[in-house]
Image 1: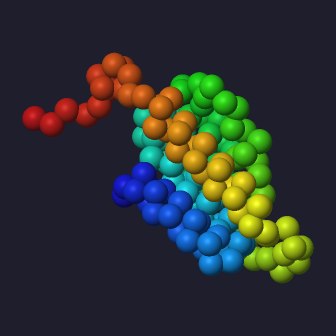
Image 2: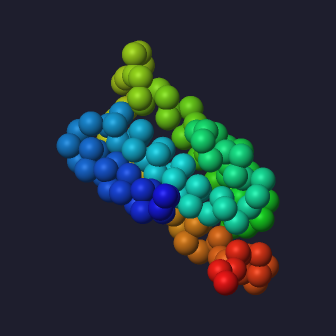
Length: 135
């Protein structure tokens, strides 16, 4: 599964739904984008792999960040994502929080996560050495 491509697709969906005025859907797509960006590098961090079938972006980020230190602390963004992942999917009450500005904030969180993955989670020599070799 190409998590990176899924993340990029969900980020596009977040922008499209925001532009169409579906702000809760935009927040949800942004949260999925964040999750998929993180999962795109989890195979390089053995302890992170236990979160593959969860939506636990907080601990997934912590595990990845233990190997690839982020210059910008994204933990508060991960906590917001974890909170609003469900609330945006099932907005039974308090839907007034889902505004264009709120959706924009989550799109920026997804962009921050993408930047972290693209620029700070670089493959190391030990990653290459531990990669399974085809014979």
